[in-house]
Length: 327
Image 1 (cartoon, rainbow, N blue to C red):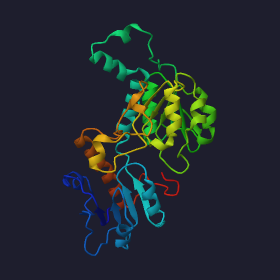
Image 2 (cartoon, rainbow, N blue to C red):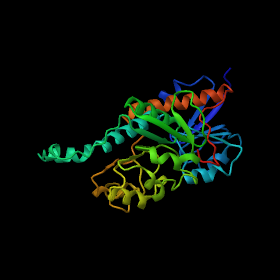
Image 3 (cartoon, one colour):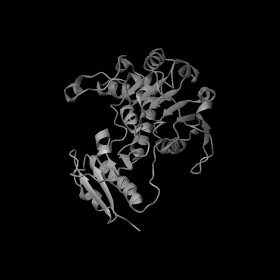
């Protein structure tokens, strides 16, 4: 049975009716960066929760971050409110997984430099030794075997690859027959990884997880794909591994330097190292969860409605985040 549930959404959707049409009758919504007079919401929906927004209503018991993961700043704020449960939305998992596979294929097959040459009428790459890597029969190591990682694993199996997953702790996976190992086994698994696909959150434990030592453990001809967060892979070590050819290729959607404001968007290099000069790197501007806006927003609203309806029905709310761990 649905009870009344009051919810405040700091940044409302362009068309609120796309959400309200999916909600149970007892869910009551308010919107906007300006908090309602005499706030009494139980659920706060915002990407960057502020202390004053959580404290404004004495009834706040749930914060929903409308995407996957927590920023460091968000984590620091939420740690001050241990009584408040935090939840994520995973609506963009399919889009992020699809981009991971797109980057894997583009990097492994050197699609970008081939495209660039042919646009200039140059066919010579067709007649020289091919740098392309064959993926069928090779091993994909999926680092971060969660909502995105399992989708990546499924696509890799479709390419005829063997898949090994790594997550916080080992254990069987009910959805597949993939090997799943704990993170403590990572070093032992890297020498067998022809492709390393990263889809785990950035936390104090994963910051710099892949450094020079770990990259050196990968076999020659390995391809790395990162759709998670840039600092999970050491910036200098990654550049040097690619520049020297120790790492065969990479597809990168996440970076180390981002524009601070709109004025910087046209002219901000993504790294202090010149990745853009390397032929064996595919660069993507952190758009892993993106698709046509109407498609993404519809998925977001359905995912948000699922969480709000569960809370109103007194059911377990999906996608609980362990704030101390950061995911």
